[in-house]
Length: 183
Image 1 (cartoon, rainbow, N blue to C red):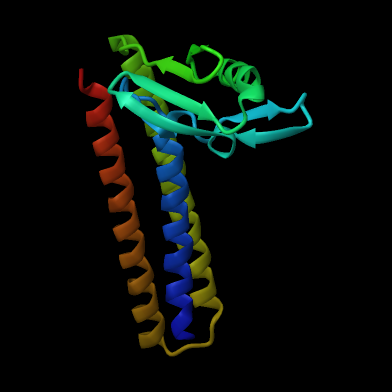
Image 2: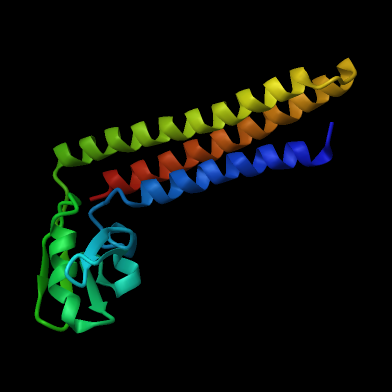
């Protein structure tokens, strides 16, 4: 079996975890974090192009409940504000003509539970991506014309990688749930 095979499977699993990590970062926790808005797509320059907020403005957290966006081009400030409002993120940006302020309201208990449910769905999608990579790898191993002991070794290595990445996903979920439950 190609020694790079196991490494490529681990890379695929690592990418799945990174995608999940970025996805979970968008779930707001009641604290102001730039990741809440950085990847929101906004139509700028009269709808000529859609760009991410981080491509058109700097995003800073001034305190635990406030985000400040400073556009690189002040002429598109209203387009950025409108794009954030229409994003479905539940944020209400206010503009003074130079900067955009977003006050992050505290989460209600009901909203916290909804976000935990959403996070668990995202975690399950991460588990599915890992299991899919494992399934594909095991199928490749079975197709390969290898001696039994080498097949067993490769299968154990794939299972070890699967267990490692599933554990990493579970740890991400536990950490995010703690953040969501913090008042």
